[in-house]
Length: 504
Image (cartoon, rainbow, N blue to C red):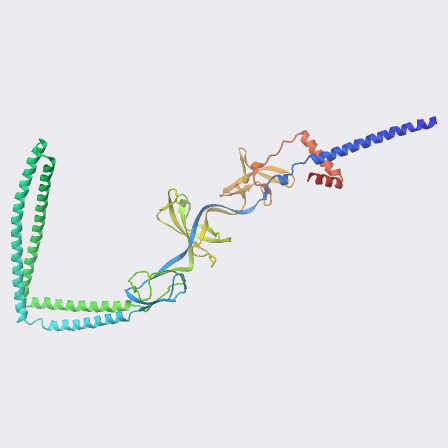
């Protein structure tokens, strides 16, 4: 029995050691389990928002809004006034080039002109007959008429002379009245200054003086007019006397030549009148047609109305070609030039981008009223490269004009570049680590920047570098991370799964 007790003692020691080791292992396992449960290492892939650098266009733009307009608005009008028979279109109708839109009733006007032409031709015939009678001296009633004209002209001259004499007397009287009024004013001025005369009486004397001056001026103007009338009457008398002399001696060469020439001129004038009538008749039209395809935007005439010359009867927006018009501020216009490319988008067509170019920049600025104050703008016109039927006239559009552009370059957003005293940096993520990488930039656009050096296509970068906070490494963090990675490597999968379930 004694030998057995001696032999069992080492077994107990071994059992104790084994139990101790098992307890230690359990404690270590529980500690490892607790460590894996409580400690979560930073997951760089989830901490920040990333994007992949790629090649794209970097541009500077001027942004504005505008409206789609027709390339041109064509007015329909007539070259002479005429009656409308029927209007064949209404507001909003779509018309084609060559389509009849108005017919006219011009039969009466043409007949009236034809009668005038025939009457003028009779006048020409009569004028030519008068040429034959120029050389015959005046006699009978004709001679009496010339004598009567001379007598009447002499009477008119005498009457004009008498009027001037009467005016001379009235002016002389008015001068005396003006002199008397001036004396009254001078006297009243003295009395008024001395305080012996009321202001009302003084002002009344000034009014009398002013009225006398005005009356004198009126008489003088009338006298000048009377003198002109007298000269006219004298000229008329000379003409009447000359006509009487010519009528009594029509055989004089000079008289015959002048009268004959006058008659020829009269015939020429009538011929010109006939030509005018014929030209007026040619202006009449039986119908108006649409000069181009488009939409009727204005109808200003109705059946049976009178179409006035040059007045717009119908307006047609030409839809075969459309443009965009925008009001650009005075601050952005200096950056624009004719020919610059632009992108045009519409809220109603979110997936469509239309290409356009600046075709016109207004020469003058305008003031555009706003709710707060007046804004100075310049109208700018854009010609669309390939519009389609989806882009309707009147649509509001957003316009981005490229003032400078670098195409197909390595680029990333401006906010992703970290600016420091040492230079420009980007945080690059390779799947495990985050590296602060120095770069060299080129052309700066409105929202992106060209990358000249330091990055390659496909690199993943932190979109917001200001959010990056990389803790400093030391022996403790290094040991902690080594322990975590080692435990993760040797911990059974079922235990890791249980830890993840507890964490979640």
